[in-house]
Length: 544
Image (spheres, rainbow, N blue to C red):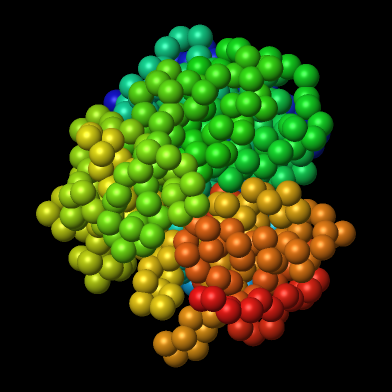
């Protein structure tokens, strides 16, 4: 697929977006026509071929047409993080200024409502331009980036480190969209529903550019609406009769809990595939979601676990469409020693690792040490060309057309099983502990807000000090008992005991827009006493 051919192709379907309490609608042809007017405004603002344009991509119509307009003017869209949860406007402004300097962009496109809040902290460092101000009347000759020129620079949201920019070309983007289309067996009659943030690769490529390029109807909600009422994700799928959607497992867990408490009416019988990815996938989350949504017509075969990353544009592997998700049960203690020991029976000290399927299209996957837990390496025609202005990091991660992902996993047959990021690994008593394994189990405790627990090493020197940070769903819970239960869970899943549980009010943990807890910021906030905990429960380490 030639990526920018979609800008001139005639389209029959419509785009709907959430706007002040209801969905508004415009044909895709109308969106592209408005994008031409936005492109003219950008051209008059000095945007030319090859110029990077700093963009904060929120889920609005103005952003969608403006992003297309940047390409029509010849610019490269640089997607900057939206504010992380629990981040002050001053910290956010500092982050934006640092990225704009690194990027070399002289303008920053943001929602109009953010301009006033950012103007003071940014203080002339970069020109703030509102998305709604872009369109002007007139015409010009579009000059989108060439096939092998920079077109999209995805800055990570910084869940484990500072943001870095993955540079993508139209060639890579076009191949990726075809890969997604083949993976989902996209066909006339399909339709898409999503709430995922456009600032994230899963939202931008999987849930906006894919339906746009394939001329599929799209109903685009927002992360803010999902947070207020998580039932709206599956509710929108039912209302619009969508056949395709996507989301991270933490969000699916939240939506399942919300649905169990107060179901929404509607049927999910038209849904053929919901891609689940973006973070480690717990088998228990898929099981619970299948059970809760079964009365609406949803079956396990509708879930499509997948693996991908911004450095590969998006998708690397997935299970086949209409296939039933599967897992391998392994010994947790052996896994901590980077050994993959398969076991038959469920019990304490075992972990279910969900398959993320086979590589798609021309992508290839290998692990450094076959039959052991080790770093995942990928090859793909969709790989980024570099990290923007990061020569050392690019040389470290990219080599001979292959990317060292920083993710850990193993192969079984021709399927990939992802355990977590190397950054999620803690060293405790000369052994490795995978934080996500503990967090996924603690998330299932009733009094804990789903997706709102993280374990960090707050120790000094060579002595580990494991602290579990949790947001409470039920502030009336017995915190002593809950801390003991969390510690027992850590012992069962990873063979370690916690030193302390810090209980926080809802919204306290810093998160990326896609819902990942920013572990590195949690360590900093805890060390500098910024958190205002509801209570702290210290735990005894007797017995190891």
